Each structure stands twice: as C-alpha cells, then as structure tokens.
Image (cartoon, rainbow over all chains, first blue to last red; front, side, top):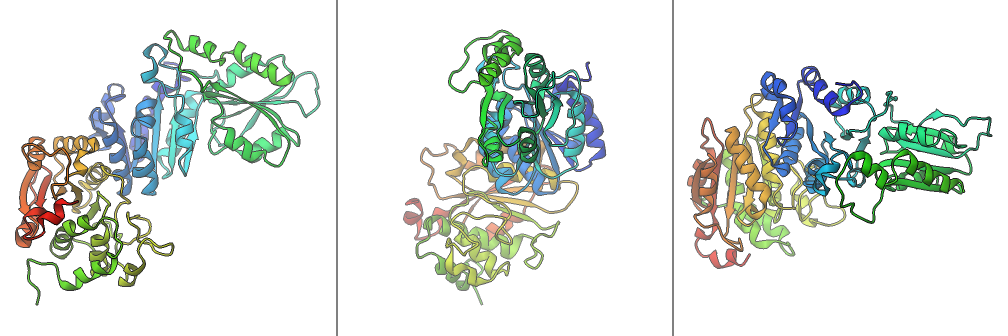
Length: 304
Length: 236
C-alpha cells in the first residue's frame, strides 16, 4: 500500500493504537471488520461489531464513553454521520462525553455507488453540533498522527478519510499554514486560496501561475481564525476550497473576518442538485468543479 | 411502619409536590413503583458518592415523567428535596426531561425515545470485566416502537450481557400493540424474561434481583394490574 493512502493506513494503525490505549474500543457496524480481522482476533475486548445497526453503534459508543472508555467509531460517512445523527447529538454531545468518529468514503469517493453511499454534507452536519473538532487529513501520515493523538484524548472528534490524497503530509496542528507564497514578487496583499485537506495538491496545480497565495488546513472546524486573519490582512480576498458541501466553512470564515471588508468565494460540492451519475471520483470532481480546471476557473472568477 | 407493597406516603408526597402542572402525569404513576423498589431494595448506589465507579447504573430511557425519578432520588438523598419545588423553571436543575450534567444520580440525559437501551448496552460492555456494577434501564412499552431498541435487544442478547437489565413499564399505551407480548420479543433474542405486576413489590424486587450468568434480563412490569387505576393508565 502507499503510505499516503488514508483508509488502509487507518486500519494498519489501529492495532498499535488499541495496544497503546487499553481504554480504546473500536466500534463497528460490519464495515471495516474485514480489514481488521487480526486485531479482532487479538483484542476481542477492544472491538465491538454490532452488525448492521448504526443506531446501536452510536448508542453503544455513548455508553462506552460514559464508563470511561474511548470509543473509535468507524463506517462509511453516510452511515456514520447521517444514519444516526440524533445519536451523535444526544448519545455523545448531550451526555457530555466524547468519541473519535472516523469515516471512510468521503463525498464522491464511492462515485460508482451512487447517492446512497455519498455524504458531502457530513462536515456541515458534525459542525452544527457543539463541541466537535473536524479533521480532514490529506495524507496517510496525517491520519496516523491524528489517530494516535485523538485515541488518547477524550474530546468529540470527527476524522474524515478520503480516497483522494496529497503527495506529501502537512502538519496536523489545527492551524492554517501558508504553503506557497505568490511568485513574481507581487505585494503581500495577494489573494489567498485556502485548501482544505486533500484539496491541497489540486489547488496548487490549479493556481500555479495565478497571482495568489495558497494556504492549507486539515482542521476546518473549529477554523484557525487567528491564522486566517493574519494571512488575509485588512482587506481579505479569499477562496476556500473544500472537498465537501460548498460553504461548509462559511460561518467560521465570516466570524473570523467580521471586522473587515472581505470578498470570499466558497468552492465545494454544489448544494443545489443531486448528481445522478456514476463514473469515477475524477468524473465527479470535474462535474463539481473540484478538479484543477474547475478550481482554476472559479478562482479566476474571484480575481476578475 | 410502611406496607412493603406500597411506595411510602412521604415519597408519594414528594411526587405530588411537583405534579401540579407535570407534563406527563400518567407515566409518573406507572414508574413510581418500579423506581421505589429499585432504589429501596435492588440498586447498589451511593447518594453521597453519586459518581462512585462501582455504582449500579439506572437509566431512565423514556425520559418523560421524570417526577417519580426526581422524587425517589431526593428521598434517597441525592439532592435536597427543595429542588422539587420549582421544576422546569429557569433556576431549576430539574426539567421535564432530565439532564445528567445537572442532576446527581441521573445517569443519562433522556427524553427523545429509544436512546437509553443502546446506551445501556454500551455501558454494560464498558463495565463488563471491570466492575460488578449492574446496568438497569427503564423503557416504556410505547417507547419500544423505536427501532433502535430492536437493534439493542439483538446486540445485548448475542453478546450475552449478563450485567444488563431492561425494565419495560407496560401501561399498554402502545398504539399498534405487541402481539405475543413484550417479554417474548426479548426471550427470542436470548434474554431471561419475567412478567410481574407493578403493585407486587416483593415479586418486583425478586425479578429485578434475579440475573442469569450468561444473558441479559428483561422484566416486564404491567401497570394495568394495579387495582383501580387501569383506566387512568390506559389514558396515557
């Protein structure tokens, strides 16, 4: 496997993480179990597979957390976040306990599977609940570091794995980082393109000869407001490129820039229509304007 | 000297202290017998140390009609009885649905139906092999409509969670009914089951104390067998 590939990396890291954290319990609803058979055999007390029962999966996670365990809950994004959304709200949040939710199958990863296996609204939904941190890693190394750190923690954390990844890992410190300054000596006020998670390489390619700076974060929620303010300056011109529902980070960006005149473009999966096509993730990225050509076209629109 | 088959008048009085405008009157009545027997005779809990790691956990899943729970917790000393005087007011920690972060002795925030039993399964898994504590969850017969309960009943049965007890308060308020009876649905999934009448405190205590070594237990409490109040209970 490629070290950059996130889902296989997650499964590979689970066994050492469970070994290092005796309180951690992997909670599954069938999906994923086939990848961690050895771990299940080796640590039966630390893996719970409830069958195809997502409400029970999330309720069980809440109950485990209430007894001091650290649930790591994993399945495909639609079944993890949407199927039992009220359980996330009540069995974790309202009980004031934490869990580490890890989804696979981001946005249109399962393009050939159709709408039933796609949940581009997942980050928006999780962000709508109090007390959650959302990580959108873009490389397997980031996944490994996040898993090790968050499995040892106690907070409410959503980690969103996707099939699309960047060539190189980025820091997972929750901050917004400048990745590429504008070329050709344009003054410091050049527009900023903020790439979230696996969109970084796409954004770098899309904008390589445009007069913009490129920044990156893999923690879109809560958004690093200070970092964003510092990078965008007194009159921000900003494009946010996210691999899920367009405008998901709009509230965080608006709050960060509330005291200054800002022009902000939000690029992501369109909200207004369901794409009733199969094909590859690449096909879907192109249809949503999330390939390099589409991102470039939209950023050029912002630049005018 | 109190009759062992009735809730002490002092506790009934505590309920009455709250029930002027109580939102879910009938469910208060239907759960008081069960709650009193649990806290007076069955559960190992510590009002002075409500977070004791080896305490038995009681989960009021249905969340409605928490007045009886509040009354019993106050009677047992989890919090001052004065808290019962302004329930659901701005300054009160006690609402029409309980919040675990606000009330000593309340194990889960509940009110939306069908959450307690799955959470109880997780608690039983979390405590198994680490503590002798039992997990007792109370659900209503109408609450069983929620499919999340069917998921949890199956999971608890297959996992043989012998530290889990589900008490079903059956006031026959379910709209579509449960052909074959409620206990049969648990029995089919491998639970130990018992049917008892709410007014028979000795039988209730016996059923609630009885645990099997390899399986969860369900106690179905029929409140309509409580002489004289059947019509009122059914009105729920």
